[in-house]
Amino acid sequence: MLTYKDRLCCWAIARLLPSEQWIIVARFRSRSDADGHFQFLRQTIPHVKFEVVFDRSGDSHRLSATCHPSNSVTTAL
Figure (tube, rainbow, N blue to C red):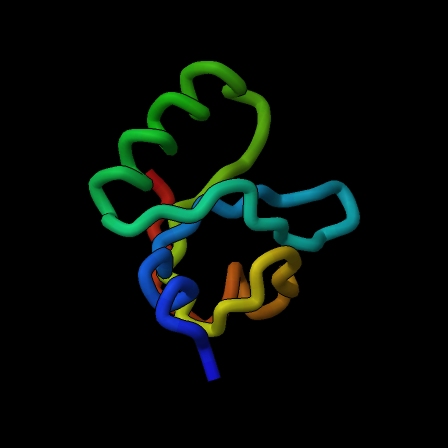
């Protein structure tokens, strides 16, 4: 069961690691905050693959690449 604080930040930015694992690099309360930070990361570090994900699981660090950053809604802008 997720705590109230964990439920507040369900939008996240995930990064693909060389080992084919996804790691959460930041969490946000709103989709627009996540999208804004995603755009900044894309411009700052263009060679790294990031995705905005909606992660209700609360598993804060690593996600399997086989489930393509969690079984949640994903967006690659």
